[in-house]
Length: 252
Figure 1 (cartoon, rainbow, N blue to C red):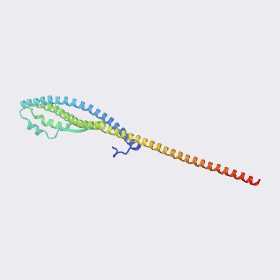
Figure 2 (figure 1 turned 60 degrees about the horizontal axis):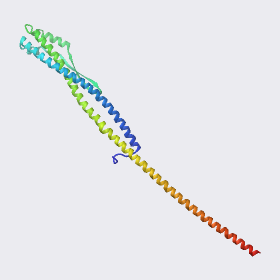
Figure 3 (figure 1 turned 45 degrees about the horizontal axis):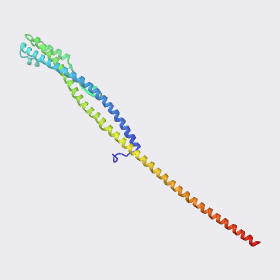
Figure 4 (figure 1 turned 90 degrees about the vertical axis):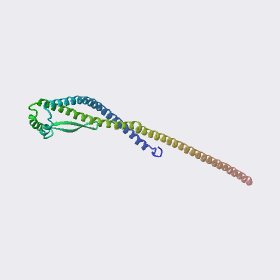
């Protein structure tokens, strides 16, 4: 760590800002994950209910188709010849859930083409089985609506499942890897800065002690010189007094 990070006040401020950003990102991702899980549970419940309904509806539709076959014999060829255009189309839209675009499939019926087809199929089963064929058609239309709805829910379910896994990985990475690493770096920088401050204090103390010693030695030297000068001054004064007394004796 010491080879990669230079312990300084600026580095400490940078990692503090990174830690704050990581914690905010962790909170936002946690909220996003909670919102996605709520939607995921709702879609899962709706998917299970619609799958059960589709199972029942498909059974009823095929039973009604068998009834129509029994009443009107084989009419597949006539139906294919009477239909010229697609009566039902799938429209695609998307729904935004916490930044995740979920696909939404809807059925759109072409009313004009439906009326033309109804006119072409009006003669189908005129002699027998017309009611059974119409009933089978309605049953399969309801099954088709359920099938498209199940497909839309299933796609949203898979998309949310993948996004929730990725979001959980990011949340766990921030919580257990990134933020603790930033905190360790801050602790390391604080420890190094404390050591540096203690070293500076010890160095300053040593410098002050050295200066005090130098000043004390200089004061001692100065005091010794002053004492020496004083001693020399006293000797000079004594010699001068003796010389003056000798001169006085000679004069007398």
